[in-house]
Amino acid sequence: MEQADIEFLTTIVGAERLSVRESDLDAHSQDESYHEPHRPDVVVWAESAEEISAILRYANAHRIPVTPWSGGSSLEGNPVPVHGGILLAMYNMNKILEIREEDLQVVVQPGIVYDELNKKLARYGLFFPPAPGSSDVATIGGMVANNSSGMHAVKYGATRDYVLKLQVVLPTGEIITTGCNAIKTASGYDLVRLFVGSEGTLGVVTEVTLRLRIVLEKMAAVAVFPSMEAAAQTIFDINRYGPTPAALELMDPQIIRYVNRWKEMSLEEAPTLVMEFHGTPTGIQEEVALIEETCRDNGCLHFDKGVTGTERDRLWAARREAHNAVKYLSTDSIVEIGDIVVPISKYPAAVAKAHELAEELDVPIATFGHAGDGNLHIEILSHKGDPRARARAGELNERIVHYAISVGGTATGEHGVGIGKRKFMRQEHGASLDVMRRIKNLLDPNGIMNPGKIF
Image (cartoon, rainbow, N blue to C red; front, side):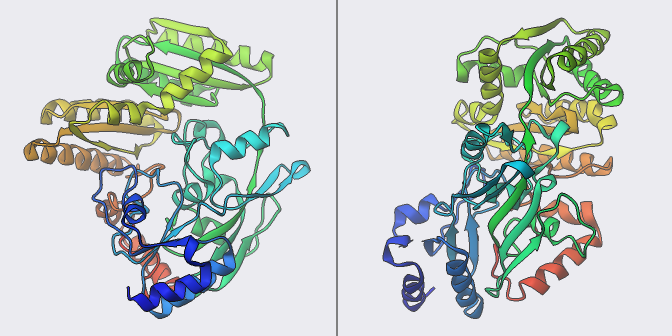
């Protein structure tokens, strides 16, 4: 970028909302992933769709890359500005614009943080369910960009299941609105779902209308198993025969060991299922009884259904911190997190495959995941000073992704493609990838929107 470009951007947002300081460039050069950082040329804090429109019109005319940045909590390098250019920070667009209590809807700007939104909605007895692991920093804009989900996905689904309407600024600067306020429509192409999960490669989302759910009674339960095979088989049986918990999480002994140290807890270091149930008190009791029977049929060693509200919150906080526990307690290692999803019938085999590959390649791993929807996360560690260990870790990740795709699964369930999963897209999508590229080229012919991602 030239100084003239910086000066023009200053006329749009003012000097106080634009920075070329090294500290700001560095702060927006890397997300929470292990991928190599890349600095933007300038960071711009926009505050309206109109400002973003003017920025994109200029960038498109001058072929300047633009990378939208929300919370920076992504795990595949999704918002890393690999080609420099303009880093479009969305922090200041963080308002709740309207709560439609009677329609169970909310209209928000993209910069609002997930936990903050749900705190505001709680007074109305409502919530937005997807629950990403980084819920204290993840923004709605980032969740829309990656189609994020999390611990409640098994019962409630992913972000795309709740997005009704979007305001989007296209690379040309055109501002469009797609979708409607009704909970279903058969009118035209579903452009809402096109933009959800597009990782900022097609435009910039500036307003989101979400449908909400009613807050219900909650109860948690913990089941401990003698082996990962028994725990994984229980997951399959629960999904096959029901009932479906609101959350069904698998933690292996290694991840529990990390969590115990990180959160100063004393969970039993054995294969464990952590479950949450939502509903009426009577309905919850019936569901828990059926789930306990399934767990015990698979050799469950302990089944604790007396988890108090305080203990439940602490337990879920610990589960959300699983990745951070591994990352910050392994400062001598590169920590790469996998994100495969397989058909639920293949879940026991996928868990076994991960541990089999780890033993074969001599790579330390810890596994956990949103087991109820077939999502397995694998923390893959390699010593920073050992290139051979790093190569083995990379091989493990590639082989488990190839396995997932080969059995009808996907390379990424909720982290997105970003930088890290681009190499698997052809295997997963085949000729469909060419159609995606044509859509990208149609909307962004000059390739300015978050270049270097997905393709």
